[in-house]
Image (tube, rainbow, N blue to C red; front, side, top):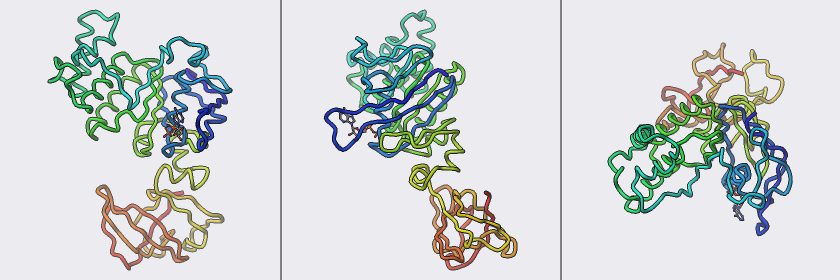
Length: 323
Ligand code: ADP
């Protein structure tokens, strides 16, 4: 394990409505990407700040490899040197050019290596044409890209990403993510990716931790957490879901208890005598990727399904359930 967080607790002294973070434990393996999801205000950023050493814990411990991470009360320069935190509060050297901003983070590199690394990052972040422009003349989106380039100049042991690309357009953010994942796997760096967008986390993370009211409510391999969430509250944080009862199914399906089913586990196409479940379609809309249907079972339970063609509302269709 590269990072070990043992039962930490922290709260802001001036805060009444947020009870702080409690009993937070997690482990991060070398080369692992951990996605942290949860509602806004649930404490994700606070957990990252504690891990990075920006807050003094009330209890618990954090270890990076075998070294204890200390908060500002014990550390002159807050923030651990083997970790990097990239957040939306970005920092650039205003009076320096874009290229100099990147060089600044490549101390110890030969001139040739500096040029090579900077060229790669300038291209990646589509900053090539601005490399000789001073940062103070850039727009805020461009400055954010410079800040990201600075953060990625040298990939640290642990990279903490706090919704860092929320201001980038989708294609660029995909490109930067793909670059990070490749670099991370190559260097065995570990990443904690904080996001409120479940889709982003499901795409890039290996493991997931769901943060709810200052605690980690569930953690595990990504698809285990997605398909087997502990309860409906946590299930909803990662996307659409259905709860089906034995009475919702056709006779051949032997469900004894309630079943949790993500919409992608319902497959259209079974004839009535082969179907696990029949759905009376109430509504069918195209969401840009697939057709989303709202259907009703014979028991009157509402169900969401994803299908690849338009289904006529008012008609009944057979589905198989992959459980
Ligand atoms: P998330 O990242 O999940 O949106 P945060 O960790 O940013 O959540 O915030 C958790 C709670 O702590 C929020 O209610 C927020 O207002 C509060 N908070 C964050 N930073 C401070 C601070 N410096 N002082 C007091 N309260 C804070």
